[in-house]
Length: 218
Length: 218
DNA sequence: TTTAATTTTTAGGCAAGACTAATTATATGT
DNA sequence: ACATATAATTAGTCTTGCCTAAAAATTAAA
Image (tube, rainbow over all chains, first blue to last red; front, side, top):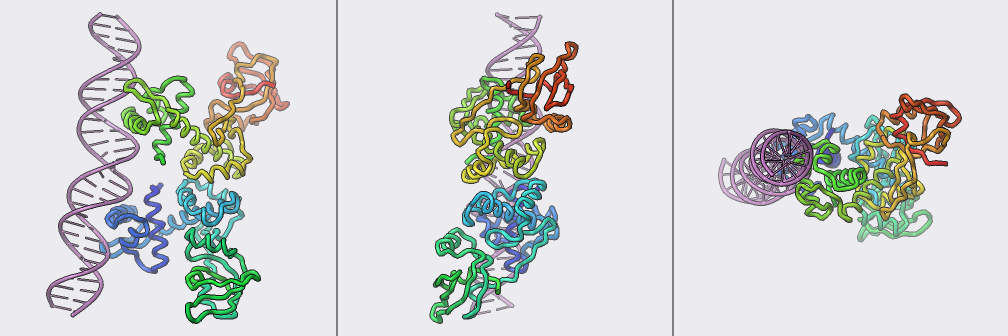
């Protein structure tokens, strides 16, 4: 139906749109995709011809309804494969991205439906990101960055903002996992680092860590 | 490492070599791959530069040791995915080929190792074809075409020669599956059709069917 | 063995997707 | 408002993988 390259552009435009809210610039896409602005312009014109993006020269792009539908389906596939790799093949959450990036392009609706079923129709992937259902709908969980929490408050770890291998490995090393209960014991005024109690243990983390961990209030 | 197209050529050359025994002609490859002889020549020169095939102009091609290793790894991946689809996702054996054709190109040794483990290190795929292990070794089962069996002999169904959807669906419809015990009750001199007893049931099949079913003697 | 038929290779081209360099719009600062 | 900086687009090229048509090599037939 669509080439891998087209799918990758659509996915990138989707995630960049989410972050910025409005239409996305050529350079931003080029940066994200490690390619050049001119290549982006080429592809955008192609996607525009197929009516997957709204595009006026020099005005940035946004996905059409059709484009969004495709984006959500690719994301669905990516995240389901991540769950599969972690739950069924014992990958750790920092190892799944590159493989899922390949698997997300496999074309077989039956495969994805069955996989979904086998995994018990999961709503979130191993990083806490929501998985669109067959209709493209998903429930965004009400979550807040740990760094935003005041002293004495508590919550449960439900996701990561940065899902780079470095960050995930750091969390593993410090035994911080999704589902863990977190209490904010104290905050340092000087560097905004935080003293926490995680599943009973005392932990001290930097502001940078705190601003990449999502909690749900409990 | 190698493009999908390169991998597909390598796989085709491998299977055609098995059948013919000797080096494979350009036209044969073109036929199998639904492409043109000139395209085959192009690709063969490319593979020859990478020392994956032995090639002298007008003399056909054969795989080098390196090429064989790659072929076996692709076949390993293809057949493991077929087992996965049938055993874990309840695909029927006539539905798996196209999806496995895509999945076989996913690059992740870890993925394949874990998949292999999850499936219990299977030795044969759903059609009875052997699965190479991590080192590329596999045991070819001693098997014989049902059509070669004399009256009164018996065996167990272990594989199919033709694995087209039509043939597999025919077998399903007639409740003939791998593992079934088969007794040759009688043979018609006129059309070489056979009267069988399969798992207790009486079945009458044409010569064409019999010459596409592999049995192991029991 | 010499010709005819077949197979294979070469030559030249096309589309997708990328790139560099040059050009044109838009945005910014004074 | 105007010059300049930045961003986006166009023009032209490259590689991969495919194609058609023509030429060359091999094989088969008389």
